[in-house]
Image (cartoon, rainbow, N blue to C red; front, top):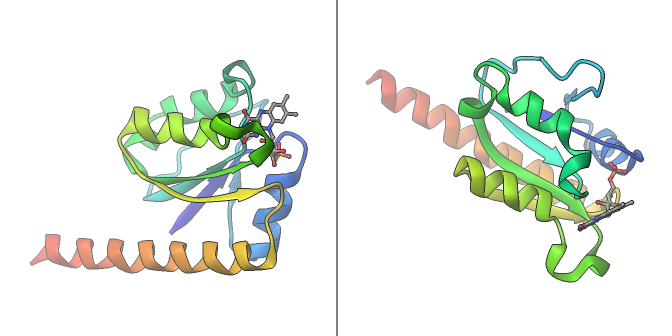
Length: 133
Ligand SMILES: Cc1cc2nc3c(=O)[nH]c(=O)nc-3n(C[C@H](O)[C@H](O)[C@H](O)COP(=O)(O)O)c2cc1C
């Protein structure tokens, strides 16, 4: 399963590093990158106007179609707005929120995220097989 992520102050990037999973970092200067295969998006929560690069990335070529789920980073002090960016994107593109974590995630967040990604990966490969048969 491919992973794309966005990070402004570095917390999400640190989380991704701890998972030791390969991931593409969405760039502010050049968000037009095509994932080209099913992937999970990991995004922190900010005001919508700080998410232009993520929106450009999602609008690029097949990126919206290939999105399998969204993981949200955030801060629970934001209460109802906790991980709202991930929730909004997931709702807009009709995919599930597959995980949430605060800041750069705890050790168990790291472990559990890897598990969720593995599960999605095997689901995806079963889906590919059943499409062939
Ligand atoms: C200006 C600002 C607005 C934020 N708004 C939210 C929010 O609405 N909901 C939330 O869960 N976290 C919010 N956060 C917390 C960040 O999403 C959180 O710290 C995240 O880990 C930052 O990720 P990054 O370092 O990869 O950019 C906000 C942080 C800042 C600085």
